[in-house]
Image 1 (cartoon, rainbow, N blue to C red):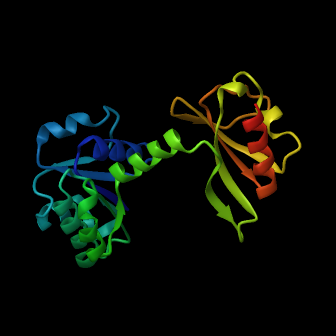
Image 2 (cartoon, rainbow, N blue to C red; image 1 turned 90 degrees about the vertical axis):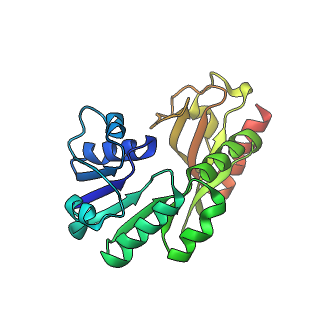
Image 3 (tube, rainbow, N blue to C red; image 1 turned 30 degrees about the vertical axis):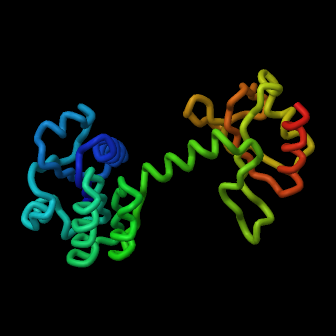
Length: 216
């Protein structure tokens, strides 16, 4: 099965490299031949230069047998149209398109396309880290009995252990993110101010953890 990426900018090159590293068959299309210089030297997929709306080019890329298709150029209009072609004309099972200007979201919605808006998601994520100090639920299981909560470690907990934070609460550690890098922690892991900790917990459990953090 082929995985097709339209656009070899920062997002497209990173996506194509990640798919290639999984051992998948990848084709990436861009109008500019120099764009392919953004790919890793280890990239093992195909690079095709040309217009993404050229059906002959799409078929050379393997769209008739494609498992998934992503359009992540810097043109929302192009992403929407070529994504629609992949979905409606070639019945590709998984079509995802990038949205760079939130004002254009109605265009993607009109085509019924699965859309990822890096700008909107990024702004929302930064807002959460800047403004919200309490636990944020990022996932709920069942009827909400168990949730995965995100907590930011305050200065008063710098150097203390994750075990101290979770002891006696109805919770389990999921991940600790520091400087943008997430790790699976042991309960003896030492925390740093500004760490983002994800825990799986009951509501009572996360409330107990929040009380500890606020009491420092």
